[in-house]
Length: 344
Image (cartoon, rainbow, N blue to C red; front, side, top):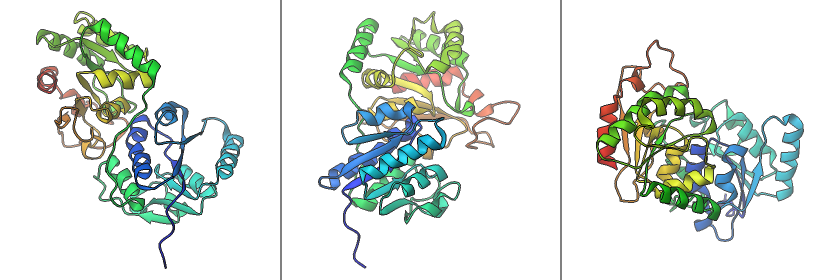
């Protein structure tokens, strides 16, 4: 049987989260470079939508709004069918994403092999590709999908550039006086978080080493953590409080200018790695082989992962079930400060 023709209109289903979408965009860039004239659509949730809406390799964004029930899903399916995609790719590996790819009307529905998906989502795909062993980094998993269509595909990292966000970041840089060290307080999974008081103590330790300027970053839900970090030493260290005070595109612009990112396994960590900002990643429950900062920074140095290894780690759990969250609590402030000084 001859191979199918090269795709011309491709739908990608990868709705979130921020770090996953940031890594998955290597697929869009690879297809654009390798398939002449290809048009790419992307299904995404609102939180991660700015990553694809302004991306130079994504032609159309289909927003899947949460909470709209069956009526919203029917409207989305109608929108996808009207776009007449010939190929739909399920990168999410879940029942809902695979089913949406199947219902899009595309003749080719492509996903991953059975052992690398969740919730039996493989039943909705028609072509299933291998994605390596379970410890394969997620970006390499997305790259494997790209190579199903473009065998020589490379990992090209691109994120949107928004002029207003770039101007905002330039203003913050002018106020700080130099490229800052960014301390990211949050993480979606509680098992991935380092205590906010330790970030405050870290800011003080970095200031004692003559490192700065410093800024705290995080989402609106990290305001309580910001207050704890400021009281524990960040305010005295002169850290600029940007927690909950920047958009996603503004954060990307600031990361492009930062001297160092320090934080846990979370979306901003992957954004930092994607724009070449040096990363010091604090890992505990998560497996850095799968979700660590990918590749090298703008200076050509590998990003650094710092972790302790109690017998239970990495467990991959969302919440730590033990009385003491050892994998993160055993990461002492002075050890992190020393690593940050070397990485900055």
